[in-house]
Image (cartoon, rainbow, N blue to C red; front, side, top):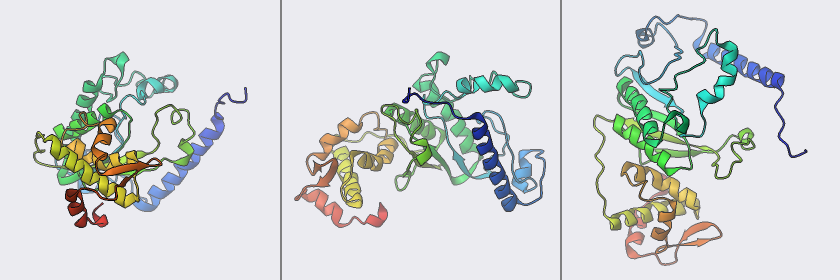
Length: 303
């Protein structure tokens, strides 16, 4: 019985959220001040008449003018990791006088086999939201999001959705790892087999026309993987496969190679110029001349 999980104290959880809410209100008060304006339309935000707006609706159709937003920060659902509406149904029935307990299952951008949502449906739902983000963003501005998943198909889906909507993932600093919050590392969800702790911060830039995916020769793929892997190895003084893959991911995504080159396919590209020791990859004593020439001009400040 000692190993059985225990339910959290409901009152302590409520009190903790209450304290966090008060702290948040104090912070917003210090930043925004006493002035409060009821939002009449999105133009009130653009003109500065209103300081904020809270919308409870699907993001695929927003009441915001074209090219009026400076930046978008979002945290989209991670594939099938969490079925939000299903999980919220229990507590929604207690407040159904004020909230639609049925929710918008049709527009919820997740994978859910019970709702007939596979990976393609998930991609299309995200694309609709990202197109709306593209519409309201000013030219060349950024959509930044946190994301993580162990399924490469989900990674490919979210990138293709952003690409189809008119965004490009920056290959330099377009993907930054954010370590997990310590309190969340012990949850049952985080302890599941294959779970990955932490998130990645992805930076997508709005472009007029995203580049078309092109066919890349196998030898060129190998050369690029070796170069990017060498950068990771030098920067980390020996890199794990995950660290190397984090460096490769933006390039693989932007060239539509993620479905073709998974983690298992990366290792064969490394064996010629790298060797693995105690779980980390290092450059061999004598890498080939092409890689040596590349590294002579490489600077860590560009990592």
